[in-house]
Image 1 (cartoon, helix red, strand yellow):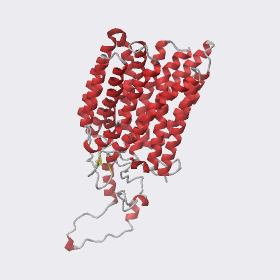
Image 2: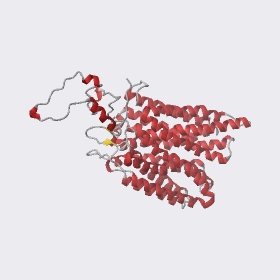
Image 3: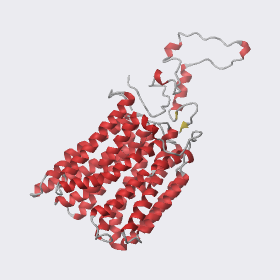
Length: 495
């Protein structure tokens, strides 16, 4: 019999699920008295005693069936917890607010390649690429690392103050960036101020969705996370047009004004609804790593992010160095990547609700590893000696950008729902933030490691490609172990 795991606290399903005895002490199940109408015919009703005054109608399986459609629109997790609306106006408004927050913070994160290319040719042209890259490495690191306190604060206090603070910091970072001329100014304005602001925005934006969705959490999170990919398409192309027309300062100010609109929308729409647990603190608690499945899942996300930012950073430089692309098309390759990622963040989330969150993550990680080793690796090995070879390299690189972008989009959208499946919903922010605090060290070191590999291979990209493939293979193994620790090794189990 296929078992269906829909989250940390599954709701009742009268048609297809049966309770498992080992879970009865912790999960409140409603068990129908008769599995089918025929069984009820063999039972004789006991009439109520007149002194009790019991006027309730006798039990009927048909009445049970009539009530079932009502329960399809919501999921209940226990007597001491609330019912998930699984949508509704309030739920989808929160989802749209999270989409707006992701459009700002992750849209900026997907645009760091454009900023690095411009600064290396203008304000910071006297510095080498590695030194400039630390500005953006610190930005990505702080975006995830600061979540160790932001997640627990969200669990205890809600999202409003966090989103307001993050919006102010992110918008100030963009509005002030045009005034920077020195390296330390860019580091403080973009790396530190922008990184902390991004963390304050995206942590509550992701966690709030878990307060309104359980069975549809994958779809809702995927829709919200798609905002980052949409921003990753719009902002690089917008800046590429604005830089030569209005200059760097006004280009970043225009981007800042857009962020004000997006952050205001997020502030108005994102809210929480589950009350915090009594006595819950906002301090870090590493005891959650005693759950081996959570520890394996965190390791899987670490390896995944270790590999993810390598193509984002080096795909454009690979295209320029290959000799198969003209400069304009080479810079547009990252937009193709983000276009595929926008679909990859929404579609796998929908499939995860149908097939299982961990099942979908395992499939997408396998797809990421396969496309890296079968598309990007041949393109990196081929020599552009003939027109046919250059055309082959170009076709492989474009196909890789689109397909890997689609597969890696799930890395962002499925991570929250996989982590949320391992914990109580009221602890969702703490678990997710703790996971990404560990993962942040991967984002800080992954790009420098890839750069060292590129230097060791004398500028040939095959070593960087193999490193990316190994990272995704390791991530795949960690998620398989995390899933196996919860539901065993049968492939037919939905989890």
